[in-house]
Amino acid sequence: MAQTMPQPPPAPEQAARRSFGKGRPVSLFTLGTMRALQDAAALERVLQAALKAGINHIETAPAYGPAEAFLGQALARLAEHDPTARRGLVLTSKLLPGAGLTLAEGLAQLRASLARLGIAQLDNLAVHGLNTSSHLSWALEGAGAQLLEAALAEGLVGQVGFSSHGDRALIEAALASGRFSFCSLHLHLFDPERLPLARQALAAGIGVLAISPADKGGRLYDPPPQLEADCAPFAPLELAYRFLLSAGISSLSLGAAKPEDLVWAARLAHADGPLRPEEGAALARLKAAAKRRLGPESCGQCRSCLPCPSDLPIPALLRLRNLAVGHGMVAFASERYNLIGRAGHWWEALDASACARCGACLPRCPHGLPIPDLLADTHRRLAAAPRRRLWG
Image (tube, rainbow, N blue to C red; front, side):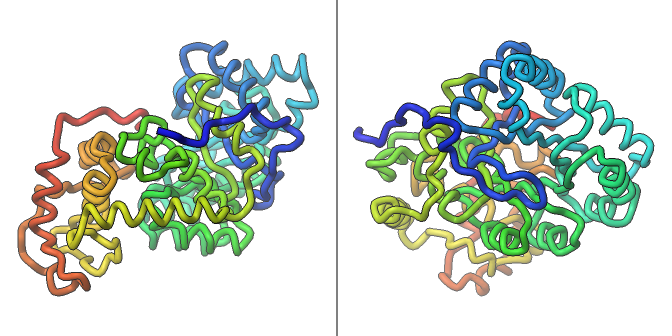
């Protein structure tokens, strides 16, 4: 099937940069270091490929196993051979929130990260997984607030932000708090629910990083044939990236395991303009194809069905059904579905089998969907042997 294919990477000086909160501008793509962990040499090869693709923003975390240590070794070698390239890099790392984490312990963890990276100051420090109200309280009022303030006051970090897998109300409260200069959110072509929050953040001068639009966004590096046909003449991943970039998102994270994983980042390193007419037309065809296959059973994700008396995340569950039926994304939808209840506060707690068929959602749905029946169908289609999360 004919698709737009990646071209040779542009020279780094041609790569676009976007503002990122109060910090230095960042590339349209961010190299995440959670996958190239075979050894330090593997991460160094990926880092070199990222530099060739014009990437200057590198994201890591203590939770990513040996990533910080491997990255520190690669940065030291880069400083020896190309100090200009090393000085151009913007580094982000993270700390997990925790009610039991004291100020002294938090500062010790941060200094350990700095030591592993071989730096005196981190450009960006994110609270890793601000997913619950207790996490937010920790960051705004408790020991976490003291930690973030001390890190800034002592010059250990340039700015602070957060990543979140939480609900919209929690993210909105975090953005409105004035505490954070950047955020990392799930923003995907096939899950644009948080896009209004991203626009709100950008309008307030808060940097926005899209979490894993290739993997969490639908395993778009390995699309099913039906999705390829829906996106033609564009590759699904290309279209997903352009959708987010055209919306003004500061940077898109890419967890590369090998240099070849960076090919689209290189191809789109300066593709920061609005959607071209042909891209807009492809997105319209994509949406129309899904609606045609789903017919009257398409969930519009309006959330009118909530709250559910059983606390079921109805829109999230039916979104997975939309993807499986509407675009043939069964492998991805099943993978996400079978993580429900197994990932703690990082993902949903209840799957569709918890539906009590109370019918409270039925009169609320503006489209008259038979929601209990669709939830049962979702479970039949997607329930399978669960898979382990990469982290957490």
